[in-house]
Length: 373
Image 1 (cartoon, rainbow, N blue to C red):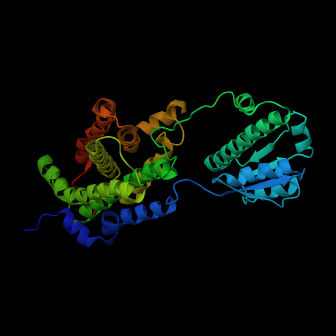
Image 2 (spheres, rainbow, N blue to C red; image 1 turned 90 degrees about the vertical axis):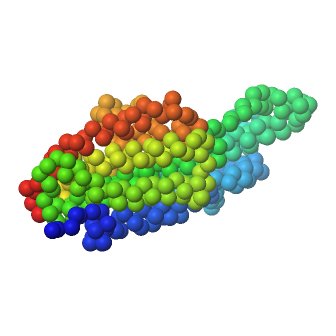
């Protein structure tokens, strides 16, 4: 009598299955933590062209140097040279200080500070532009106070006139403005989703190579359970390792109950595996199934709403995003981990993940006993 096939046998028999189920995700997490170890970009290169060479422009350049986000590069002689640096990607912004800058400042005029920045690298360019704007605003306020005091105004009045409103801006949910929290915690679930679907497809392929699926529906369900439960156990350990890496390697401090995150990951895994069973059952070919899943789930990060608001996506993009389990999981992770939300907020996303399980019975039905081996 042929022994019953299970997931442990599949793991022992398939090297690629072991790679996916055991150590690929930990390696990717370490790589991700290494890339985002700095957290916040610092010392971004900015070219400075000083046409005035005055004490005022030197003070402004010192203000730019004082910003931890900027690394001003002087010695650029013309806009043409600065443009070449921008085109080659050697600097992210070009700051031009016009001739007569100090003279206009002393006359009480507003000299123009021209800044070009590379918006192709949206986040880096915007961060550099914001840092330049903040440094220029700080210098402008100090220069305004100095000018008013020179004209005989008292110091307190000069300060009040130069900065009549002092906004207090308090970032919420990511107070350190860390890109590791912003990007890495979204990229990792998208990668794990691909690992889950590929692992499940390879396990199903191995099972089909060993023996046909049973004819009886109940036996087929049991055969699928024996195959997938060891692999599912290893994958959920990967998910827990991912949360641990967020906490220990990226300094992520969840605000809400971690139980909701674990529940979300379990449901996401079950949803992805259900989709994998359905796709494999329908196409009956692992290469085509892998190709379909790659086309379907590879762009998951773009549809999560992390880098671009889902509310501003068109209907097709929102529809495609809704077909991906990772989209709904992020509606659990972000509110729970960053905003301390509870069940009332994340219940719709958990329900959406649960609905993916409805395709599993169809997938089991499509696992035909006469499938090619």
